[in-house]
Image (cartoon, rainbow, N blue to C red):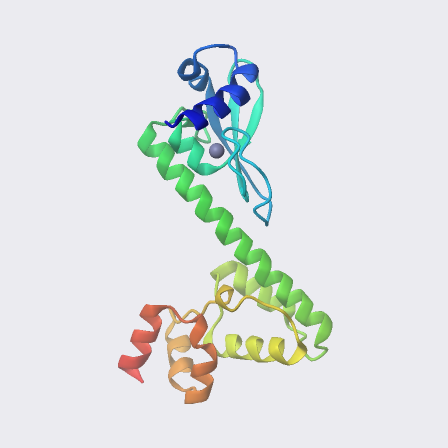
Length: 210
Ligand SMILES: [Zn+2]
């Protein structure tokens, strides 16, 4: 641990802990609660090490003082703070690391879902012919992706209506046979339009089967 870090962590954590002098002892009073927040922008400082530019906040809590502090996920791992699972059990370092990574992935995926829904709502307001918004949202929430035809339709309508969207948020699914057939029946220019939404595996599959 570099000195700069230790000084920040001491300054931030000791006043909120039961142990007032020994940092390692104080750190052992804290647990990662599993509560996380997405600020949507990297605009906060880590309340443990003062590192700036935190977007995803992870909550740690002191078991004695009940104080809570919002920190970056790296700090949970850096200072070996243990996580608590849903049943209240303290997790070891391996399980804690797994949980932190899982929770982080979930935050990123939830943020993507939110952006896609925002774009669809925007489209339904700008494009009067787009009347199947509820179906589109339901489909996306269930599967996290769209069928090839559905995707082509949405990308086309959003572009036409001037809806801003993040191209890589819109993913395609071809798990069902009817979705595979749909893709294979598309014209070249149509496939080119949805290509940014295709994974590397999907592109490879398309090349081998078209
Ligand atoms: Zn930090």
